Image (tube, rainbow, N blue to C red; front, side):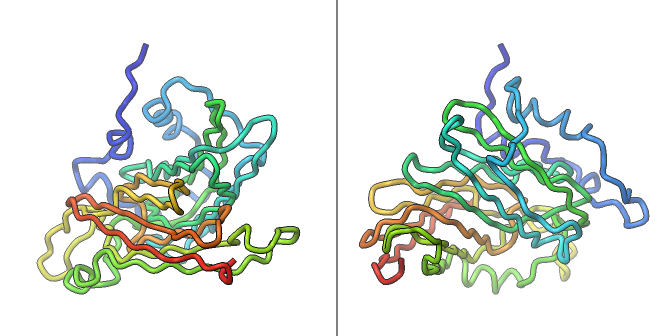
Amino acid sequence: MKAKRPRSRTIALVFLALIGAAMPLSAGAQSTSLPDSKTWDGLKGDVFGQKPIEDAGGLVTIEAPKRAEDAAIVPVDLHFKTDAATGRIKAVTLIVDENPAPVAAVFKFGPDAGVTHLATRLRVNAYSYVRAIAETEDGKLHMTQAFVKASGGCSAPAMKNQDEALASLGKMKLRVFTSKTPGNEPMTRATEMQLMIRHPNNSGLQMDQVTRYYIPAHFIQGLTVTQGDRLIMSMEGGISISEDPNFRFEFDARPGEDVKVEAADTEGKKFQDEWPLESSSL
């Protein structure tokens, strides 16, 4: 029986030691047609072992631009549908096939969180499939994917200089959007919340434009969102999450209970914040 890999090793999977191997192909070298699945065929066993992976069949859907405007900030939108036959989605893994570290993030959802939507922003280093693999309560895996044309996202220079980024390190902001979902009872569901965290999320492949040295990898690797005493979602992240991580999600909110966020980065720094969730916000 194949030994199960620790999750921390899964996130770091296939992280290339040689920087040159991670550099994107030139535009002329990129194929305009969809690639075959050789990369995924070699990758899925390392991430999921021998577990079969079924087509999502609408259980989870993914939206991403066919051609990214900015390869370092590629929006990815996931929607989840709870099916009575398959049960609740308890986790989802985001994978960018052609990135140096393909596993972008693993999200886990609380048993009564009712998360139906999750959006974030990714770095995409070369023309690649972006995949979402959802795990349901019965342990089955369901996959959907989108093909994104982008190049150089993991090595693109940061938008802020390092001093500016470190000065605001770990600062958080939470926006609550009023529910407009038809049929919802008042004050029972937040249509969306948006969590923003100030952090450079350095990939280790970016070059300091002054010193010409590579900036060491430094990113948010752990995140937990709770309301009261219940888990909404947690994340274990890698280098593919964009600078200033941004997460937008929908869940079953409870009025009057605070939302708390705790995060930790690869240098051992911990950040947290808490916000009251007033009835008027729902």
